[in-house]
Image 1 (cartoon, rainbow over the protein chains, first blue to last red):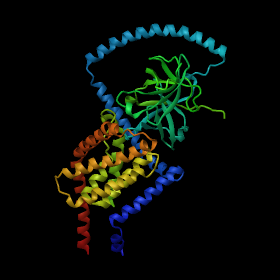
Image 2 (cartoon, each protein chain N blue to C red):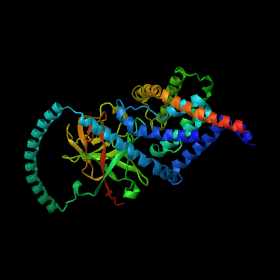
Image 3 (cartoon, helix red, strand yellow):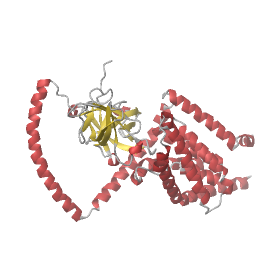
Image 4 (cartoon, chains in turn brown, yellow):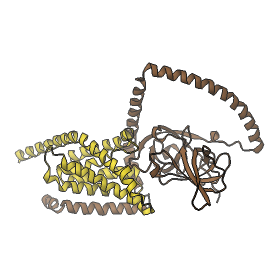
Length: 282
Length: 175
């Protein structure tokens, strides 16, 4: 009996069965996420703690490396930093006075909701997609920690991306440099609307695309590009990066250029998730 | 059974390496595809069934966390395991030519289908760019990773084999 079953399951037949099974899975997951999410939860229950551990190991290795930096290197670094501190102190003084003015003005406009006021939760990156053209990563906070889809993810430097999937103890984040990412943005100073689009073919240059600006837009090279107030998913005023190489399109109706992201995506370790979502009234 | 569990453990280990270590050793944003090495080598060592098993498990593992269509990578990896298993009768210890070509072919096959799904269906025909910038470097990098991992995996395979044989011998003596 046992042998009969063994003889029946030739490799070709097993292949056919698995193929049909996979095709069914693809079809199901194309339409709904409900059937496979229990499986996801079960596997993540085992794997995510392991991932956290491996990540901790990685951080340990990096720290060991840092310790090995030579004293000379550190000394030159210290003097560099001292200069910087002096510079920053001066600037801080300036900013303090500016800030007071800003506060007064904000009160005047009844608009005291700035980026610093949004509730934020820190998270650690525990896995990076290895598909070399789809930049997405996994963070160690999930729905158990109050994460939800479409929450904005930032780092100290600026906008990182948006949460696209949430599971029990982890969530998936799509970065702004990902090929299928679109962000409605604007120039911080001139308020000209534009679109920031990730592009795989610009992988080497470390830039992404800046599109759909009006021909009369006053965007200049080096301008700060922030998320727009008309964006449906992104909170307004988060820095994305700096504009460059702005040229007029062939049609003469629009302008486009490139954007250098403010965030260093290669060395990202910790991110902040803004737990307040943009509310769109329909 | 022990063998299958051991392979499952190996898949999880490779997955962890893939999502953490590969980011550190990536050159120009291109990282080696470690997961694909498992179905290729286990298929080549032990035949189609083994290759399909490791391919399916590794693919599902990857799909669960990173692909939107669950089952896509699993299907691709299963096919890869099946085809490398077909060459297992040509298995020879110390022969690196077949595994190198199998690995290269597997990465090409997989990445090409990913390309179709992600870009061709969105009407973006930039295949030549992908070939030179992503796929070919990934092939080279993965082949190098495979050559490094070949010896340990081969050894592990042998250890698992000998244990299986021992159990069989005991069974036969009892009978």
